[in-house]
Length: 358
View 1 (cartoon, helix red, strand yellow):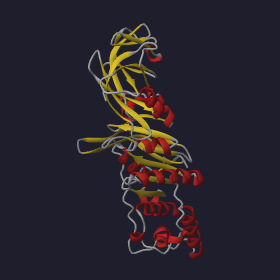
View 2 (tube, one colour):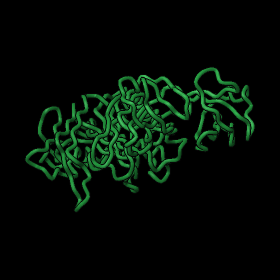
View 3 (cartoon, one colour):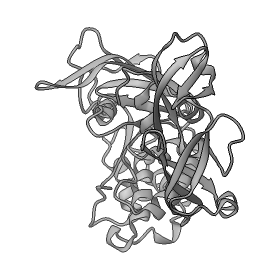
View 4 (cartoon, helix red, strand yellow):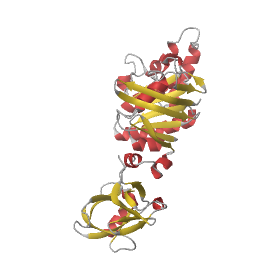
C-alpha cells in the first residue's frame, strides 16, 4: 500500500506549515519524517491521516495506493495511529484496549467475537505481552504501554501506519530498545509506515528512507546512508550530527584553509572563491607530527568517558575551537595533554559556498 502526497500547502494564519510538499512512500516502506520543531513534519503526517486538509484543494492530492483520499475524513482512510502519549483507556485491560477499534465498528463490518479474540491474541504475541493481557495500563511500564498502543493501531489492519513521536515520552534506554523492536516488527508485518521524530539517531537506525523537513519543505530524502554521507545542503549536514566548519578558499581543485591545501572531490570544477569546509569530528586525524597537509592546533581539553574520546582543539592560526572524536586506542596512544601542540588532517571534506545558511 503506497502513500503519495502531491503539492500540498498548509497554512495556519500567517505561518506556512507545508509549502508545496510532495512525497511518495512505497508499499511496505518505513519512512521517517525528521526535522526541527516547526519544520512541518507533524502537519504532513496529520494531512496524510486526514486530520488536516490542504489549503490548495484543487492542486493538492493525498493518494493511498493510487486512490485519491484528499477529501476523505480520517475515519474512512483506514490508517492506524500511535502517538507520543499513548492515549490508552485506563479502565480497560490490555486485551480490551487492543480490541477496541474492532469492537466499535458497525455491526455490518465488525468481525465475529472469535475472530476479534484470535486477532488480539496474535498481536499480544507479536508485541511480546501475552502474560499481561488482563493488566491495566497503570500496571505497565512506559515501553509496554507504547507497544500496546501500536498493537491497537495494528488491530484494525490499517492500510498505513502513522506514528507521531511514538517514543518521545520514554527515557533514552527504553527508546533504544523500542526502536529496535519497531524495526523487527516492521520487518515481520511490512505495513507501509511513516513516523515523525526529531531524534536523528532514531531516524537513521530505524527507517528505510528519511525525509528531512525544514521550514515547510522537504530539504532532502534518501536512505540513511545517502543523507548522512551525501548531504544536499549545509542544513542537512549540520542537522545530522556534530560538524566542524572551516572557512577557506577553493583554489585549483583544493580547499585552502589557513594556508594549507586539502584535496577534495567537492572542489573539482569550482572557481576560485570563498567556501566553507564541513568536517565530521570523526573525520579528523590527529598526529604529533604532520604526515601530510595538516593544520597545527593546541589541545584545549579531552574527555574519554564513553565509547569514543572527544578532544577540543584550538587552531593556532585563527584561534577557532573545533572538536575531534578518536577511538579509545588512538586516544591512549596519543595521550594528549592540555596546551600541547598537535597536527590535524581533514578527511571527507564537504564543500559549500560561503553564502551558506544553517
